[in-house]
Length: 157
Image 1 (cartoon, rainbow, N blue to C red):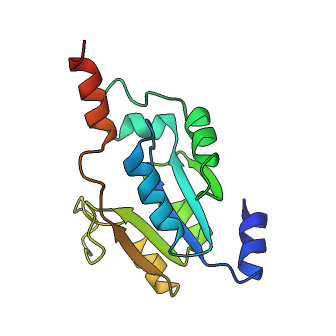
Image 2: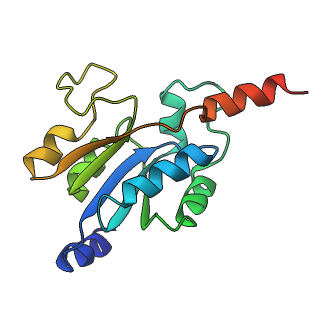
């Protein structure tokens, strides 16, 4: 990972980082990732490991797909340049290693929140800004969520 990132940095590429579970890929994810990629030259995704997804409290049935499968699907998207799995509860260590030029999260986060105990706080935002980077929030595509897809599949017979 570091060798590839260093190669991109040496070439002057702006590195964009986002993270997530990306369990059941849908139009909201694809739209979000395409918008994130446009904020720089290379899009790097921090992918929650299966264990970290379970610790997030998303439910006993999550993740639906194993990390290795989620990674392959994400790597198949034109907007994605690199997918790195992380096992911690947050991507803080990964963000510190990558030092992105742009840190991106979805619409339920607040780029100006400074309280790390607040659920709208963006992990890595303080460090990214300290390194000269920016923090961006991309709005959700209304009506599209993995949780919603799972709920609909349970009620549709």
